[in-house]
Length: 87
Image (cartoon, rainbow, N blue to C red; front, side, top):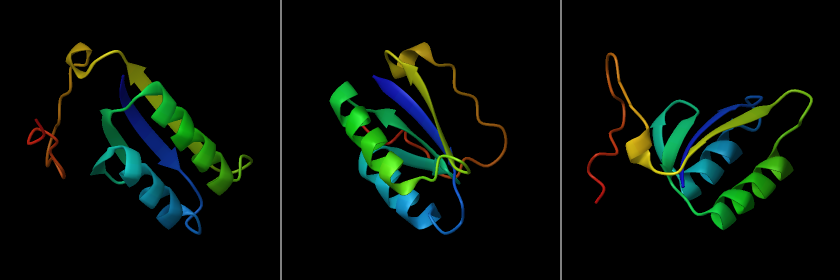
C-alpha cells in the first residue's frame, strides 16, 4: 500500500518521530512522509509511534492508497525532497 504520513507532535518528541518515520517512509517535507509500505510494517510503525506520542497533545494522520498511481500529486513551489529517483 502507499501511505502519506503527517505528524504534529510536541517539540520534545519531534526527533524521535522523525527517526521513526524515516525508518519506514521517505521524507518529503517537515513532518510529512510518503512511500510504499506493507500493512504489517505500517502496523509496526503505528505501534512504535504510539509509544512516542502523548495522545492528548500529539497526532499522526495516515492517508492510505492501494498504489501511488491512484494519487494525483501536485507540488506547488519548491519540492524539498523528490521521491522520483526511486525505482
